[in-house]
Length: 583
Ligand code: 6R9
Image 1 (tube, helix red, strand yellow):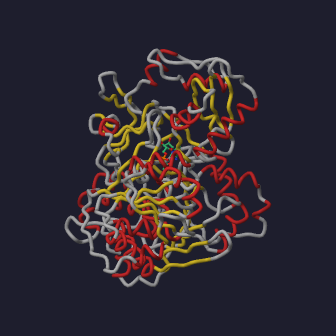
Image 2: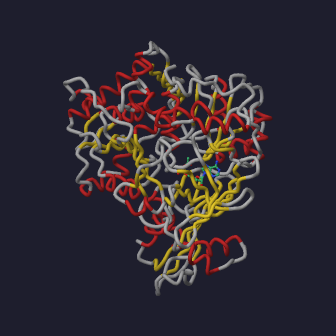
Image 3: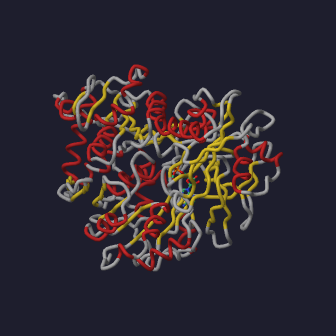
């Protein structure tokens, strides 16, 4: 391989503390970045993920193995993926899409999504994935705020989630349908055929924008976290050091590319490292999942705690008569990984789950139980070499206090790692509020033990994690507020044994409206139609009024404490917390 840094294998016996400290001290991201593709200054994720393999004679290796819902299997080699993404990039150029402009995809896990992502990157445009289970409202907000010029979707999703808002999306000049037909759109093949010239290579540098991921905060609209081409170094490094991905490995990541995990590790890292990426189009199904692990001989599997808990729920029965000798490494991300899940996996799949912690903003894994270091049950692991993590408390003057081992505080990462987000699109202040004294503040609370392992405590804000997906309460409250009967709405995450949290709404009504079951159903129905079932509240209670801070913000934490029967806590801190800079 042509990566001097990641060519170093994980030391036999794993990273001990001394190796780890040395590797971190000696690690030079800038140097590594320059080495990544040989050309000074130039780097493009799409090219590193495909063309590099073709140049190295690995064009015939399977890059993508797609398992359709209906049993269809489609395989694309690295050579085919390189050619198909070139073609898509050329079509973007023919359509007049300039480098830096946004191309969005709203689709399930279909091969065209992967081709479009890589092609967009090759054309120097910015790829913006949208979760296909989002309803029309979140889709509109994201398309509109990103000023996407091109949208790749299917006729069904277009009709349900985009068409009605098309006139309100002036920047959107081209809708390309990977399946089906609709007025004012182009078919996939017709779009590709419009490119009469081959791709004119675009030179992108490490600091050029590549990916735009929308993520949720406590207040305001979703934030567009912008990532650059140089991030690929962190994807490659973490894919190697944490996921132990090797060329020719069969790798399966169950995350949807509509979320950051599905891009960083469901597309970029495995392709950059020359693995064969298994993509399953279908939704969770225990029997199907075990079939995939067994039949496809998956070597490395990356999934989420919710999925593991669902598998555990089905028990040992669907496992009877199966074996997974090919499985080498299991990893998990997105929510706290409960120790039972690790133990269960070791017993039933033959390997423990390795936890990994990171965020949309960090772009790549920051903390993990990686290499052969012992998995500490309940701990997220240790920072990767090249990543410096501290536990801090923000002072009132904006400075940071660095806390000792064993003390609970906010996770902070020293700014400057390659996959660090480079901005929230058009929101410089919101971006700046995430940093202090050269450190990025993650908004998560944790404790570090004396051996350098990090233990997750909780979020420092009101965002909700449901089935591994980050949901902003504000987006949900806004839709409920649109109903004529609603005076105010507050939304919280309510603990759930499988999904981690489910969304629960509290609503106060305007005078003259009756809080009954019909209205409850109507409100949940409205939210499902506008937001999509993944984002809509599962439960809804009526209250005479909602608790507020002195500055008028809804005290979601108090709603949560009451819901869970917990002490209501120190209200003065609740008030200052919900007024904090980061949102
Ligand atoms: C990759 C991703 C980020 C938030 C993060 C934290 C939670 C992620 C976790 C975890 C406990 C882990 N989270 N990994 N919590 N243990 N191993 O999920 O990105 O959607 O931006 O969510 O997810 O709260 O801050 P994103």
